[in-house]
Image (cartoon, rainbow, N blue to C red; front, side, top):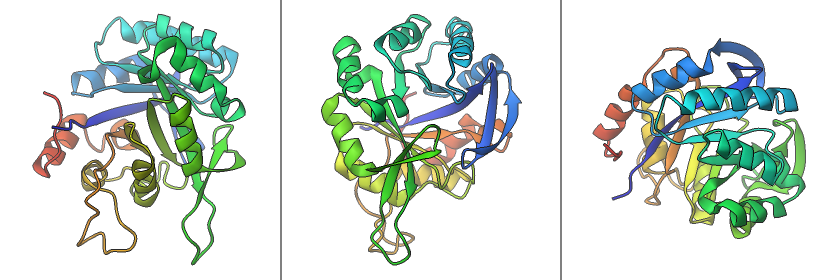
Length: 271
């Protein structure tokens, strides 16, 4: 049986949890330690902490937060943002992280993924890909990988980059849709479908969760663009985990409610 995961995402900047829309319009949400404790108690399977400032100062602040959180909860923690070297990874794990997420640093130097996997194992290495649709109307869907917090188009094809990253040692992929981020309009199903079909490692869908139905759907199946997805979903398995932020941060639902609804649709979670 394939168990799925619900992962609350805490974007942390200068010691506070923040959230925006399409990587812009950042607003303060709350204290990361208190939110982490809340989501853990509510049944979260993991927590993701992303340093969106990605400066030496903000990363040091984030490590202090991780130490406090790790002392109080037992679920896995993933740290991302500003992780550029093996030393950064070592410090994150020493602070209590079970894995690290890398994006811009891996795009700048892909061999970093191999070095991290050699040092700590592929299961401790997550590639985060900030992908944005670059194809025009009527063209075959195509996404590029962006760096610098979604600001810089690298010109690298997102699907090709994911395949290469897994070959280098990435043991998990977090698919961040820039187009869907914070919109609550739903995950980019086609982007996730293509990545799920391209690699065999676990996939975490991120960006756009707005309803319980959308979360359940991304975990069950991903849409086939050549068919009416509302009637005939692709039989390929869905994402292994769903990252959720806005819905939780702004009190629109809870981890418990998400799991109860998804279980009613056939999604399995570890008890």
